[in-house]
Image (tube, rainbow, N blue to C red; front, side):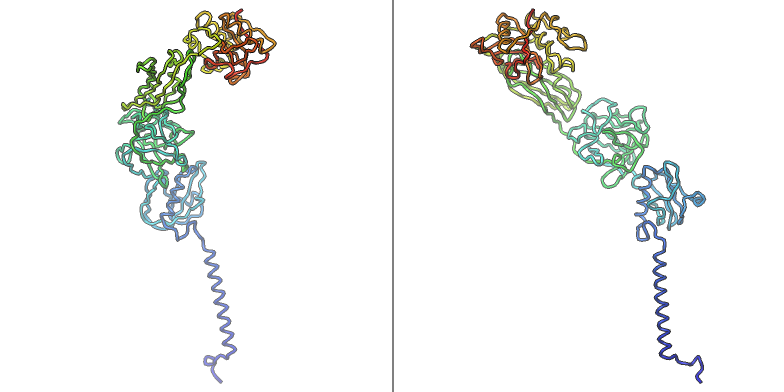
Length: 544
């Protein structure tokens, strides 16, 4: 008999043992795979670099809902205080964080509402033994030069001073990025990585409005002061080519709000991010835009000047003048805009083109900026002519007095409704050489209904257009201006001062094209049919 320890397994027994071993191996493999699958996986896993982990911590620091941030060595699964006795506080403004021991750390966040919880996106981070830099809290040294400050998401806009104002205390705004000096800031480095921003036009510095240092305070231009800390700024990375710009004086940041810039606590949003884009020193330049100018002016009529003159630098003077064929100045008006924008309506009253003698003239507007550069922005020829009357008559009158009375389109909202009162004022000016106010004939200070009797006039009704025009013809023939009821381009109901007629071949065939009038809307002398038709009911006002 062979001893048991020496017995050789039969072929059947060997196959059975092999099968058992294979089953055990398969079960072990499954358990191993299951164990790996069940292992805890952290938000970023071991494959993430420590710098990527810390970049996420930086985002938590910038979150608008974060009040405080803490970190503690080890993997902690609860935000309760009893597990955080060795926590280290991480200031929201920290520029550096020193880690003295490598390994896993847990981050706890306290929100503005006071809730303490583990970070949603990550709470376990793997860090090395080193000092990490918080880019958003680390000032970046800026080079001296001239720059645009462009808000993120508004690449066509920039920080600037409105209308190029040079007055201290004016708030900076966000508006169209222009080549003008008031859109450009001179960056002047100060101690460390601080700097000041000097407006290239006003030569004043950006800072907080006087006496206001809390959130919501406006940034204004101010005179330089060595001790004014609100004139100092720092810039820290906001990602890409953008920066957070912090005011050193109050620790608040530039924030875009409703097209103005105010001081505010930092948030990781577009309104707090600016691109500091280098540019060149602006050149002197000035131009007129959307402006009107006379070409042919009827003697005694008025012409309304409109338009805007803009300059890269503040305009110290603007001169409008008219010269005749002998190069003699016959009209001139000089103003001091003290701005980079000027509305030409400011010189309109002085440019009485219709009072000039018949002839040819040149209308010129020149400006001089604060740097002494002079530009001619308007240079236009025009002529003044008189009506050539054939088979007609025009009443004589003082055009200057008509201009002094004014016209509706330049008036108030009420005056724009008072055509009859203006027409009556023109009539009395022609009759007695005065300059009555249209308000004289109003029903009250707030009601513009014309009381004809106050001006010595009465209105009469007629059965036909032919009848009312024959009555008008008779009044003018007698040397008296009259007032015709019409409809047309300025209003469906309007009154005109008739001052003449022309090309009359038959009194029985009169039409609107035969009559000359002063239009109360703009003070222009017109042929009635050019803009209006006689209105039914047919009415005419004349001296009682």
